[in-house]
Image 1 (cartoon, rainbow, N blue to C red):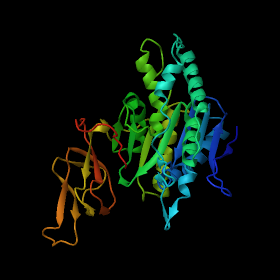
Image 2: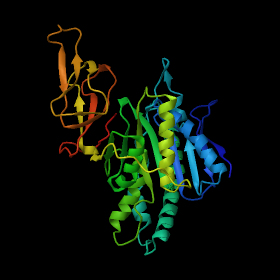
Image 3: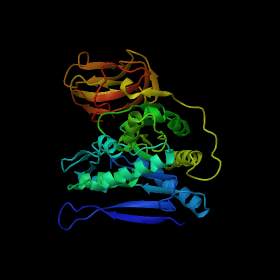
Image 4: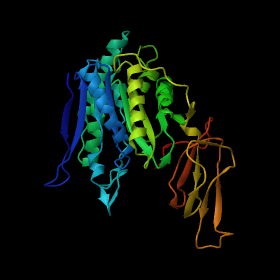
Length: 380
């Protein structure tokens, strides 16, 4: 089946305006395994669209050759709302300017409603359970209502991806080495992807606290698995993760082409594309807990000047940058900021003005930090 391109209209925020979401479909609509790939949910994070730009011709060729047994859906620009938010020539794509908040937070949390919907309906057949759960998820999302444009967009994306077998959400950080977020139940599946992409960190959390897109898809399944341990519910029925494709400025064809090839090979290894995938390379990192990420914070305002590159291993107390107050004498206006944990400095704020409390660097450590609770992703 040839690729089709679907234009999904979104609710208009005002008279005379209209936006739509573009989805490319490969394979047979509704067939399995079903894959959802999206990029730029934070509309100013643009390495992902370039990766999908290089991936889609590969998918089209596989489709022409009859090598897509199911369906692969691609939304290369998943946030047309955020793409319109240009203020003073700067794209502001992380937060909705209509007040709806972070575009990758507060997706519908179906855990409780799905648990109620499935009460007494799960049996001894795993395939029948899977089909019933997917039907319930579709019904619950169909019952959801949204008015504002940003929430309509989130609900549209959620409905499109909710019953997929695999969903990848492509993002980037400020300045970063490539890293991946996934649930601890799915480490084995995404360790392969992380290795193929050369990730510097694979960060895991059962619940990061803010219902981002990937967890909105997976956590309802995990709740049912916990609630009904005597009922067969495959843990890999819904695989979803967030891939952080380095930093905002890491946009070049060669890198994007390599990333696209790695994702293609991983999809092939998962059976979404027919053929034998190349063997995965040796892992470049091991999984570490998200609550083990040690943030380096600015204690006061100043000019943040980093001195450690993303991807580097650091030790406790190692200087990772300086916070400078240019209005003070040089001997007193320079504060060294140090690593609170040993691990991999996988991301940092770009050099520039830091506000009090800003996380200027993030370090993945192997052990959980007792004080790290609640909203583990934070604002950044």
